[in-house]
Amino acid sequence: MPGFDFRRAIPFIEAIPYGRWTSFTEVATAAGNPKAFMAAGNHMRDSDGRIDNYWRVIHNDGSVPENFRAPADMGPKDPYAARQSLMKEGVRFDANGAAAATPVLLVWGLGEGFPAASAGRRGCRHRARQTHRG
Image (cartoon, rainbow, N blue to C red; front, side):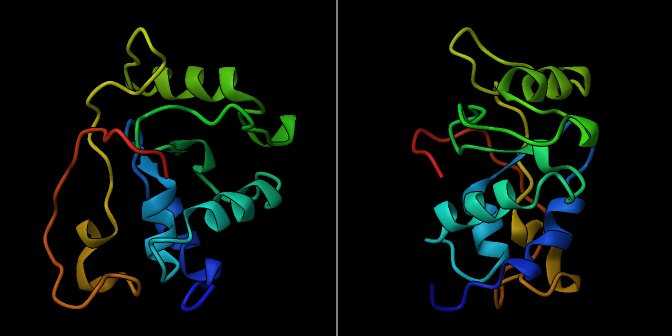
């Protein structure tokens, strides 16, 4: 994918604060191409849990991917364990299994100090869940 370099997204993923989550679209944006959210998910899956805070990356709609998996010795290993970890951090899930109105960390919320922050996009914003996946 043009402009996509997953190595640029790793510091973003590792900066997700306790009790917060972000989406695969934001990870793809941090990697340089917001349309590459599926590629971002594939890279995360292939990382075998070596990236800190990997369980805090979920779909835009707040759902944990059904195919979520990671080595058991590295943290949450399946969708249930990932939800449980997020819940222990204070993330609430609604009856449909989606993270309920929890603030999301956006790439441009990290400002100029983050290499993937887009030109002119600064400040800290939080967003509630959206309806599309990514």
